[in-house]
Length: 307
Image 1 (cartoon, rainbow, N blue to C red):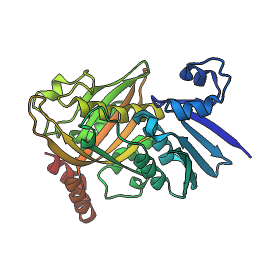
Image 2 (image 1 turned 135 degrees about the vertical axis):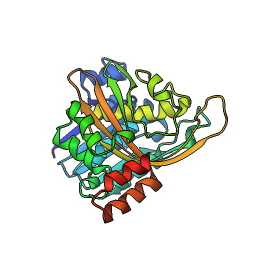
Image 3 (image 1 turned 90 degrees about the horizontal axis):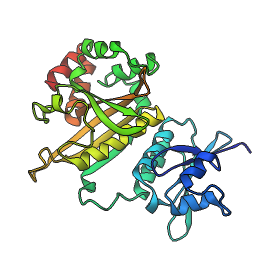
């Protein structure tokens, strides 16, 4: 039986089982025990196996899994061509479940792994992962043009990306973040003018700043993990988000947003990866799709709604 076994570290990095990188992450160069089982059960690693290119087995101790590791596994499932998934997890004993749907496997992993408890704000942010590949065949989606541009450009970022966004009247709905391998905290590189909930001067002041350092630091830290995951895996991500955001750190009031977003990783001439984020409130996005179905000028309609 052909078997490929990878391990996902708590910070979302992929390493080969028993490799030097795995031992470094384990913190023990010469383990005299079952290092894989120990890492999964006690340290929050996730074991990821592909058997004969026909089944994926995921092994984890949900209570110990960190968000970066969970996102890395879910991202890999979205891009996989395998159609059978087995999730083995530790509760009071080892249990296992089988599904034939990547989306169901992703949802089940989210249900198994509890949200971190230190902050009482963690329940303010909910994510529903979607299969981004459906956008290729969905001509009415306002997200399709930029996804096609990414694919045709082989993920290479150059000035034509911005020109393309301007031509299709999408620039106002784009943010771009920079992620460097040795400085993993994403920073703002570009903020479109369609994000009206931001203060007027924030778009200029935030450029070059860490994403986490925004008025709602909990939200900033939460979204940063997704940007880092997309940059490290090199795969797009499509989500529906519900978030209660604090726009002013000094005020208790929360701004509740339900929006869809598309994250795209772009290679640059340097070692920095750009992650573009296109988002729109779900009500607006659905209206835009209806408009597109009955009009050839759908992108103009989207731009008008954004404004």
